Amino acid sequence: MTNGAPLPRRVIAASSDLEQGMHVLAGIDPAWAQLIARTGVPRLRRREGGFAGLASIIVGQQVSVASAQAIWTRTGAVLGEITAARLLLASDEELRQCGLSRPKQRTLRAIAAAVAGGGLDLAALEDTDADTVRQRLTAISGIGPWTADVYSLFCLGHADSFASGDLALQEAARHAFDLPARPAARALDALAEPWRPWRGVAAHLLWEYYAIVKGREGLIGRSE
Image 1 (cartoon, rainbow, N blue to C red):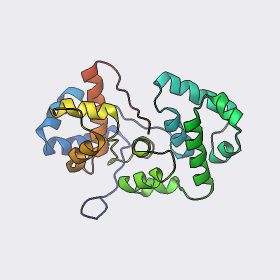
Image 2 (cartoon, rainbow, N blue to C red):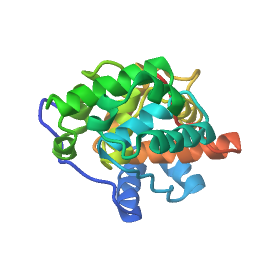
Image 3 (cartoon, helix red, strand yellow):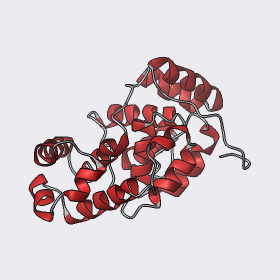
Image 4 (cartoon, one colour):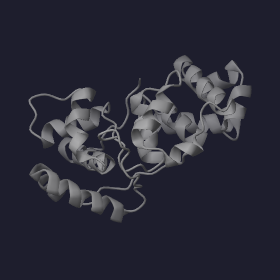
């Protein structure tokens, strides 16, 4: 939010949405124009939402993409349909068979209980501003800002979501804006404030730029 008033909710649903945000960012800071000249239009990053989408983000924390996919596939094989109701019925042994760590098991159970009990309405978040999405999700035990922001950006397509706790974004910002050191989450949030309501497009660009700078796929993930 800015000056106490919510910004219009924009959704990144197509490359044209990314291009619109890129045009705005390039007008804010010449550094963006230089970065965009290197990245072009970044890949559109969207994934399944709802309980399964949020659960998959939890599963992917602090592990490689390949490991996350393997654990997620195993979870589907053990539990069948991945819903809040099914998760609450799962035994400790079943969750262990999925390959889930104890902390991830606790977080998934907390989310499932909140959804099943009505304390967390994931569908309602689709019409909620980015800051409120973060507040509502981080109110659940085990969910930190990174998970909330990634869910908001990838699953809801929120154009103003920005995962400032992501190490790849921090490192990309250091290079792109010639910072003396990699900014911490709070410093990156402050840097990104003028990019509203297109911080989500900024995140897409920075992840793309990180991959270029490092010469490999950027690591998108940070446990809380």
